[in-house]
Length: 566
Image 1 (spheres, rainbow, N blue to C red):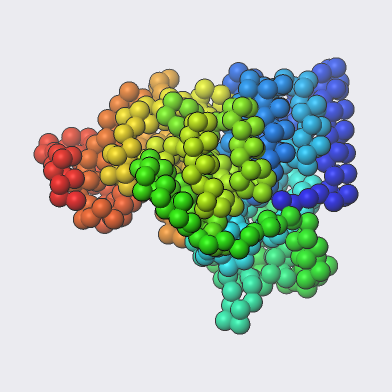
Image 2: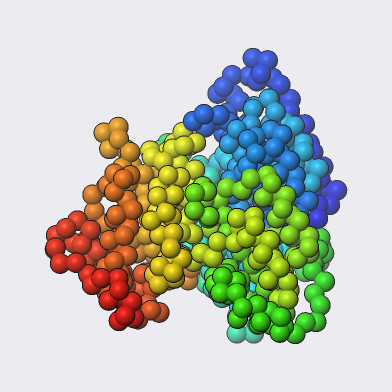
């Protein structure tokens, strides 16, 4: 965990006091709605369909058990007993009262949390790989670099009024688990031929109304120049980004309009005035920030103790959970564990206050008092001993947090949609539940194999539908809620954007459409190892389109025959 120093704490405390006075003036009628709007947005406060919504930052997805208990307390005292974990390492409270928000922010400040810049046209919460610091394929632990960027970007006056919101993701591993290619800036750690650490820099990625995969604008940026180069990128964007059109204001539109080559040239030109300047990083500064992070006191353990092996053989349900929800760790004898927030019948990403308290207890007992929030809307205990896995599984199961579906079709990513969001065209939560119920047979899910399914209630793409193997987008069709289906999207090193399958369908039709997509996939795959996304890339979307929309009436082989062939 990063531990605040005196400057960090003072900044957050002063921000709370400032917003308390702004809220008092608004409630007293001294500030109009228009005057208050940018002030509340800079502190994470939205006005949604039914009530205000407060978005709280979880910087780079790292939480302590004490912080999680505070979130649970907020959910009970000022909300309706739950919180929603989003796709960008935030938690959202959907029912706070405006007059209570200053007290909530003050409570957050006591545990070194805040809602600063979780909205508004500024640099948002920095996101990272949820296995940061423990991944076997890690090149460099990205946490210190994320914190450097957080300190540089928080309340930076030069970038407080950008043309539009700005999102940065950092990956420290060979595999990109931070979706860097679909962020305004993506930073992917690398080493050069001499072993020096640096970053591949991508710019102009993003989802929403105009989804674009980011372009590499520098293949290797030495770590010392990280902030000066980010300064150059933001300055070019701040100077030329569209401010006359909300829908064309993101950096991805600027990069596309200029071309990546010209954007790169302008950034390099701007950087020539900044390189080796006062913002150049030095080893002492990185070490200072690194020292602010507490590190687990790992023991020397033998991996896969006999009790663990016996439990795998004795309990098929435990073995299934281990296959899907337990992940490799770079320290022998330890593993990372995903606690699934995707139990059928529960809105994806939601956790009750009681669950949050219980997970905090699990973190204290099994994972050095720390946990992670993934951009797939699950919670992760990153440092669990192998010989504790069985006990952890039993307790997580009792809490409804042990669904063994990570990487499977029911591990759905979804925004809150029209049930809460005033921007949404359609609901997301009932769609997710209908799909989960259709595919609730875990054996069937394992037969299908790896499949990412993402749902967004509108073109803002908070559910990242563009990069789901199957993506679902809520659309307005003459006042009715309909859904557009896309296939072929993916995140990671080989990120791609999904292609629209065809005409939108009604909510009631969605489970049948998804079933048809799965049927054709199972009929066409060459082996059990070939994933849905692999088949789409191999045969294209036309066969899926033909089958879903009935252009060809011959159906795939039965499921039994498919399984027999496999």
